[in-house]
Image (cartoon, rainbow, N blue to C red; front, top):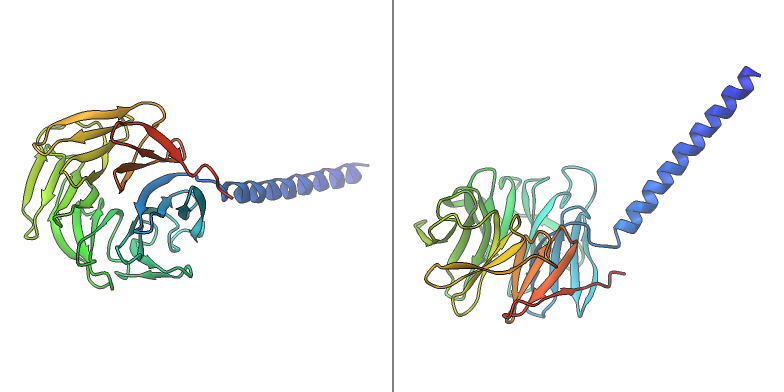
Length: 287
C-alpha cells in the first residue's frame, strides 16, 4: 500500500514537472510574438524601423505598422545578441547591433547572419552612431569611453573618455553628440580630435539615456526616471517637451523625417511624436 502511494506520488510529480515545462515553453513561444523590452530603435532610409529587444532577445523590423522578427537571438548566455542593447542602420541599409553578452558589435545581413566586428574587444556597448563615412561610434559603459569601429571591423580606436557615456548621435554636419549621464555637463559634442564641447552645462536631467538632433540644431533627450523627453535649443537651454502618459520609461530615440521615435521598454512599445509633442503608439500588430 505504501509502495503504491509512493508510486502515485512520483507519477504526480512527473506529470506536474512535465506540465510546468510545457507551460514554460508555451509562454516563451507566446512572448516571442510580442515586444518584451525594446531598448533601442533605428530608422532605415526605406522608413523601416529596427528595434533592439533586450529580453526577446533579438531585433524587430517594423514596416508599414507591421512588426516581424529580423534577428532572433538565443537565450543562452554568451551567444550573439543574447543581451542586445542597441541597433543602428547605415545609409546603405546595413544593420549593426551591440551585445553586452558577447561584448561585441555585429553586422547583421538580411539572411540573419551576425558577423562580429571587434573580436569581443568592445566591452558593454550602450549605443551606436554612424558617421558620414559609414564608421561606427560606440559608447561603452564599462570603460567609460567612446570608441570608433570601422564598418568592416577591426581594432576599436578610443575617441574620448566620458562619465557614463550613453546615447550617441551624428548630426547633419557630421558632428558627434553624446550623453554623459553622470557628468556635470550631461550633453556634449565631441570633436574628431577628442575635444569635448559642452551643450547642456548643468545636471538638469534625472537619468538621461539617448539624444537625437534635428536639422535645425534642436536636440531631444530621453529621460527614463522623469518619464520625459527634453528639448534642448541650440544655445543649450533644456526644457521638458513631453512627459508622463503614455510614456512610462523612455530610453532609445531616433528621427523619422520630422518625427521623434521613442523606444519605451516599460510600456513595451515604440512611439512616434510630432513636433507638437503628440505621442502615437506604432506597430501594435505583431504576428
